[in-house]
Image (cartoon, rainbow, N blue to C red):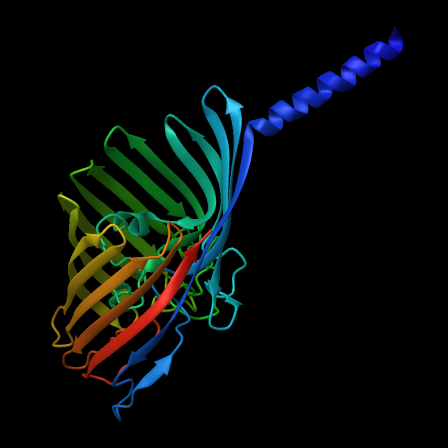
Length: 363
């Protein structure tokens, strides 16, 4: 009898473990994307270059792990670990961080999701549905590299969806702990005793969208400290962006655009700019999509303005694999030197033209 009770306890314990496992899930996912690009006027001499890009092609490559556990009463534990990859050399992206794209844990319920760790902030989320090119090699991220890299270290994040409304915010105690270079590493670790503003960052979002149209606005202010990049070498220095983005569907065609108003109070002085963009995404067939975008950055009190034109054609080989080709043009005025390709170079005041093609696979 005692032996039978032992067997029953073991069986019940196994069933309980199986039930617990059934309430949890971990997903491994990723995307590998690479291409080849040709651009003109990469320097003052007007030379051209052909290369395999590092930062992105049509989308940045990554591998990630996402998990949930059902805690009961509608509450879940959630986590995300996402690593960025540079396919040209096989190295880690985001300043060499192991999980530089995202590394967060939190709780999720009907009230929304609360997360802690390195995470995308509200500036990143604000343009997801309106920027038809996204983090493409030729895109508005070339004009403002922060936009596709808008992530915050040491952050508390909240995101809630209520019917057709979205509200969110992040608060970072130290916005960027990496000094490895590139747009995703600006050397401002924060968490400094006696200086509550050092490397702090606050972002917020309010949006409304449905199947036909949507509008989103966001606010983002980040502070500097000693040694930080971008001239933000004091906690009194700041970089502020306010965005207004919208999209509308005309049948299967998406129209999306917006404006990013930026004010930087750096050690070198105060600068202001407005970045306007408008794009169209149209399916030519179930397997062929044409995207086009124009953007213009107005740098206040300066003639260093820039205008960008890009067209991209994507052919879907399957639900997970696609090939694509794009052409682009970046017109620099005055002392402007904004490269067409993300992470590239251009001669001061020169117009840069480029073509690219590649392949991506999602898993």
